[in-house]
Amino acid sequence: PENPRYRRDLSVSLNNVADILKAQNKWDEALKLYTESLEIHRKLTADFPQNTQYFQDLQYVQRKIDALQPKPSDADVLAQLKKLLGV
Image (cartoon, rainbow, N blue to C red; front, top):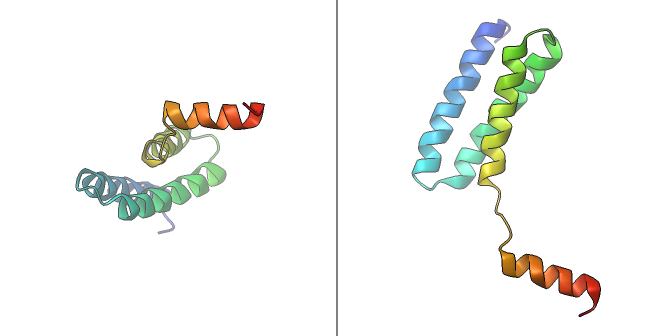
């Protein structure tokens, strides 16, 4: 949609559906919708840099995407450090 309010509403709806998919352990599908929402917010912040709500929304969606990314375990980190140090 061209209207920024409708674009934001669409993004919020995408987030809501992604939250449901995440709760159902459908990680790939959730990530796809979060990413689509993120793109909408990137365009909104570029088009309306004076609107702080769009920047807050952008950060919110980015945190949701970050939360879906696998985090290395302590053992993985230790193994990587040992490899780098040649131990």
